[in-house]
Length: 216
Image (cartoon, rainbow, N blue to C red; front, side, top):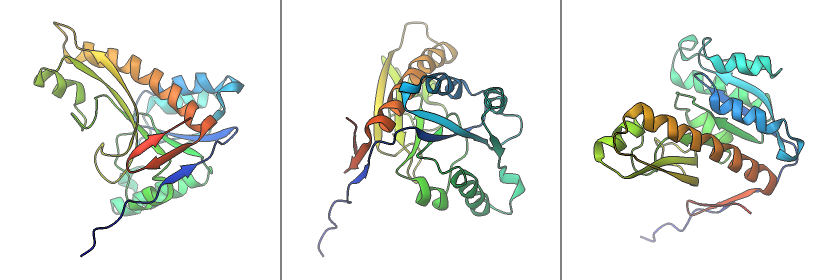
C-alpha cells in the first residue's frame, strides 16, 4: 500500500482591516490587550464580535464597554455538544471573521466549527507545547521540574493543544516559584505574543505546510 502523501499547504493572504471574532470564558485580559492593539489603525484588524459560553464571563463586559457586539452560546441550552457546536459555528460565521481567537475560551469546539474555521482559529496555551497540554500547564511544568516554561500560540485542530504552532515564548522558572507566580509571568508574555502575532498574521498572511506555520 502506498503511504499517503503530505497534506496540501494552506495559504491565507493578508487581509487589510481584518475582522476578528474573539471567544472568551472568563475575565478577558487577552481580549483587553487585543482591543487596545486594534485601537491603532496600523495594527490592521478590528474586533467585530466577542462570544462566550457563559453569561458571567467578564470579557463580555469589556467588549460592551468598547462598543463591540457580544453573544453567548451555552452548551446547556442544546441537546448535545454537536448541536452546540453547530450553533456556535453559526453565531461566529454571522460576523464573517477573517480570524477567530480563543482568548481563554474553555470549551473544545467540534467538527462543524473546525470545518468552518480550522485554519484560522487561533488559541494560546500557557506552556511550551507539545509539553504540558491541558488546563494545568504551569502546575505540570513546575511538578516536572523544568527550568524554562512559556506560552504557545497555535492553530486549533481536533486534538487537545495539538495544532500547528505559530509562535512560542520562553519564561524562566525561578527558584521558589509557585503555580500562581509562574502563571502570572507567563500571562504577561502570552498577551504580548498574542498581540504581536495576530497582527503579523492579518497584515502579512500565513501558510501552513506539514504542520509548519510561516508568516512574513
